[in-house]
Image (cartoon, rainbow, N blue to C red; front, side, top):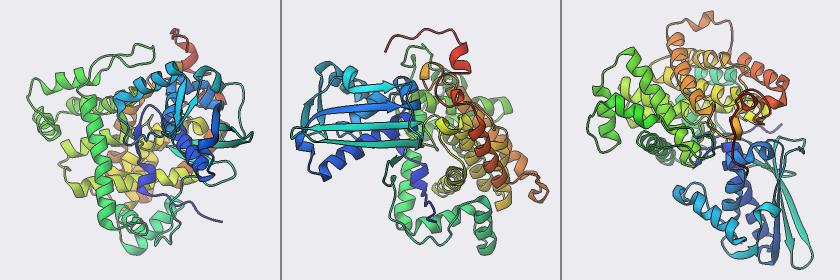
Amino acid sequence: MQREQISVFDMFKIGIGPSSSHTLGPWRAAQQFVRSLEDKSALPLVKEIKILLYGSLAKTGHGHGTDIAILLGLSGDDPVTFEVDQVLPKTESIKNSKTLILGGTKKIIFSASNDLLFLSNESLPYHPNAVTFQAFLNNGNAISETYYSIGGGFVVKEGGQGQSKNEVDLPFPIETANNLLHWCIKTGLKISEVVMENELAWRSEQETLAGVLNIFKAMRECMYRGCHTTGYLPGGLNVARRAASLNRKLTGGRVYTNFDEWVKAIRETGDGFKNILDWVSCFALAVNEENASFGRVVTAPTNGAAGVIPAVLQYFLVFCDGYTNDRIVQFLLTASEIGSIFKKGATISAAMGGCQAEIGVSSAMAAAALTECLGGNQRQVLMAAEIAMEHHLGMTCDPIGGLVQVPCIERNTMGAIKAITASQLALQTNPDNAKVSLDAVVKTMWQTALDMNSKYKETSDGGLAINIPLSLPEC
């Protein structure tokens, strides 16, 4: 049986909000379909495109920007580099002009209302997040391909392979937490060091270090931007941004002009318990308010949970004197391995497992990373991850209006604070006395996901999504 090989750059991907499964994944699927047409020399022959959205993509696709992501992906734009302030203007231009430049080269007539269909009463068996692309050619032939967005920006093509790197011989193959602990005990390496050794099978250490620091740069810029942007979130719920006003209140008029000066200003505000809790909440709010506004974020491991890891990392940098490149890399490498264990043993898709698969996993990742960076041993690191997830088990995904706003944004603050608490508990506990292993909680999470009613899996058919009397504009 071929084992899944997951890199730190699979768990952490730079993209555009608001959802890794409903925005980034469909965007990547659209790009893959265009490349498929190019490979078949069919792109110049295309006269018409139809897109069919199924399951959760259909039910909450409008609120998650699925249609927007697909239009940009078909246009040949990339979520890593596309200017975020052009997301809405460009897609509105496509809809209003009723033309689409496929792959940036082939101009076709396109009607968003007739050619991009939300089939909310239909689902495909492999995964709730499914999209089918149909290209009709001027020679009378047609090409149809189906893709599944399986969470965290990962995409699988029906009948083919998902996004994958070249298969390599990893020095430390890992499927479970027990595998990871085995290699740590055998080698004496920290979890982050085991991860780095595996990354070397794909690229040089210098490339990995540069890539991880670039991930941090994107997280840092997102958080800083979110802490200095006011107004209301798009989508019709009229949710006011809170991070900027909270940041302004907490900094108390201190003057700064960049991220490093901001870190210094935060440190000067004091280190009282309430002060730190307020700051952690502020950090998380900032990231997810950006995510909800089609800002550039990092999947960690998803967009809906993108604020937890940056918030806990920022807590470590500011209040634990961890602001060095080495510690940042250590944090993110450790977090990525915990995320990969959950992806292999359960899911990181809310459409499959509810919000436990997003906020729960991100909290476990952050708790583990913080614990290693604060000096915890390998067993304490795994224990911290277990504690964090144990107290997210059963969390449903019920976004109001299909928007990644309520309750999603506040859940990131809770996930971050739980991660810090889990780390503190693990650091003060002898892991030999633990009653629950990380592998046991991964298994339990997957069993819970299977038992969970589908209306609590990112469909907006249950929970808060149907009990909050809010009116949204017609799509």
